[in-house]
Amino acid sequence: MSDAEQDTRRTLRTEKVSISRALRLSVPPEARPAPVNRKDWLRQRKEQLQAARAAARQRRDLLKAEILSAAQDVAREERIAARLEAERLKAEARTAQAYAKEDARAAAKFERGQPTHPASKRKTLASEKRKLVSYADLLRMRG
Image 1 (tube, rainbow, N blue to C red):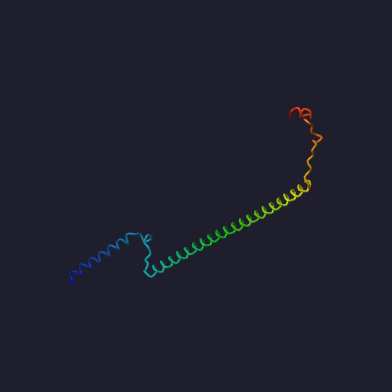
Image 2 (spheres, one colour):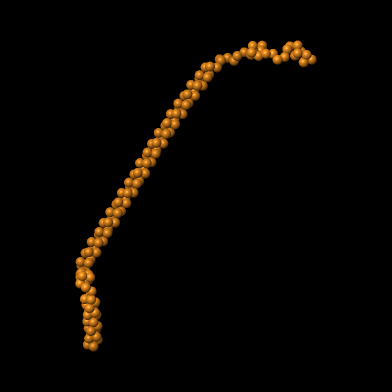
């Protein structure tokens, strides 16, 4: 590399540095960011990432706890519903059994009230019933 090329590179470099310094100085000191070396920046970034991971883990744990709580609530409700249904079925069975006993009692009572042998058929008419046609009229009608 010739001296002329080095000189031009050197001048370009010094110009860049002076321009950047001029830009930096054009900003008031309170508005300028504090100078940070790479090591400090990496440490700071690592801490930020760890904090973000911890927060995400905490949110995940909270969500898991919430889901588990909801699942337990659902299971509890299902158990209560099953118990109520079983009680309802048991009560229905009890009432059906009671009705069946009552029906059996009523049927037995009815059977006891019935005559043991059928009543003989009378050839004569009962006293309440009147003959509608006299015997003479009947003979006349027949022939």
